[in-house]
Length: 398
Image (tube, rainbow, N blue to C red; front, side):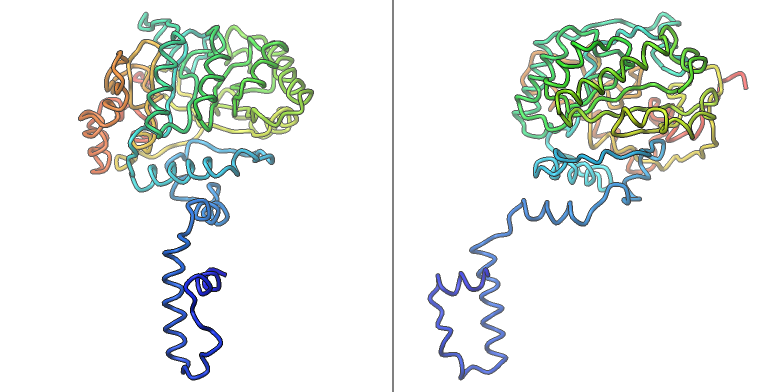
């Protein structure tokens, strides 16, 4: 079709080519094809369609090998937003940055801790250990601070996704709905947050669903009262189950497919025997079910909770260094969302317009990337305290 249109436009005579031999005709066709590509360049959208058609993250061993601690066992069947051209472009960049270490102008993803306060004391959580040691600050991010972060990322055009928590329970920030709404109005494609589900109400559920949130992840870990309340300390099993069901029913009542509901389990010795029935129990109220392997991220957990042996891998190059930054409620900007001790702090929030861009393109992060690429990540204290590098971090008394 391209050649035909161009022939008409260039007034190429096609009804007098009987004298041309086959070779010359092929030469003309090749030339027309070249000119057609110039006149009708292949659109980026077409390339993205081709990428999406032939690519599956599920089958991408190279990418999934970088996230080996994480497994989705039930997939969301309603993928409307994932078919949008801008979402496809984002996921293509996500893969390229992780696998090929392509650094974008601004991080694709920000983990924004809107509060460092949490109402639970889960024994596997780094926050719990630091609270017990008196080394934790409870802070609440101001709405103006959040807006400044979003403004910088979207003006740069690089920010595609945000996760609205790190170690705190996001719904304790009274501005959380306005934060979601603001980020979506500025063009952030993928907005998600994790929650323990304990503060959910029907009214809050309706506000969340109408806010533009793309994904909500309920961290629940169990299917029985005894194990759940042993892991999710200060929560009541029956109460949380009812609140998760309420959220699902409200979304159904509003005839909405977003936010996508994911229910997650951290697999540990305490609950591993329940894993086989976890999907059956929670599946009717979720679009996705995930398992995450327990990780003693900073070595402060004094109980061995590992369910399987993990080998040391000092050559591991963490994809996060090319994909994301973490902004803590206390103001520190860190390279890793699991760095509760803020050992790889890259900078702090300030009033400048290019605050996060300067951190992202700064010397500290560049040096960290270089060490990871040269298989020397273990020389960084924060990274040497990571299960991806160390394999298994057992309590010191073992």
